[in-house]
Length: 360
Image (tube, rainbow, N blue to C red):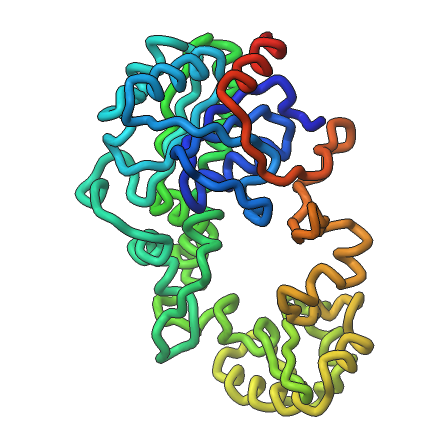
């Protein structure tokens, strides 16, 4: 099931963005084979490894390289997330792979990209987003920028960017008959994610000072607040009609709240609003605001989110062998992906037989 049925993918195992990309491809129905080091245990709790079998091969040996090239010969896509040059040194670079399969789309996922002064330097999500300006913009004024987990670089600017590039190249190869290399860098992708902010800055609507702008916590109507029970809510009432709805329902009366976009009043407005929000529990605010045009949501933790009525109705989360998984997304009207399967291992012979049976 899924819109990518019939697409064959070789995934060189790694961490973070590359396996995320491979997971989504597999969610969409692609037949993804995950190459892992000999002795790698299969963990059914590893959500990023779902929907695809792993095959143990040593890429540093002639035997392992030959086996991977045999798979490459039948594959549509290859995904690797090593430091630049590692695949080439193991006889599995784009030149060697394209010699066996000229139509192959060769996807490369790194933090800094395949070239540039930092290309060979080690790093992680926080480093890659730091040089783009994105990390500078996150956090409260006069505080150090907090690590935003690794959503921005690894998964948004990394795995998703690689996914888009692979799918675009997969479309193009239908016309050209010639594969290509996708150089997906998290630093590039994070910069791309910030296109909207660059536009606001060019128009004079965004400043360099953290915590001083419409969407970074300065605005009282676009922020999170602590409730009486110590839990939190999120407000996002930007548009005037939504702001008015928030005012009406929360009793934000008086001239203090009249000028929504008067930044000189934001500190005073936020102090007053904080006191009002702190007077009720999160559940009380949910009863008053959830589902209205006040642009409201409770801030749920990892345990609460799967139980929220909206997420339950849409089956946003599913359980696979008692492990909680985010369900495949987005929704397809005709070629809906199936329920995810837990990671499992497979022998090389089984993979070759499977791919031979599905050739073409």
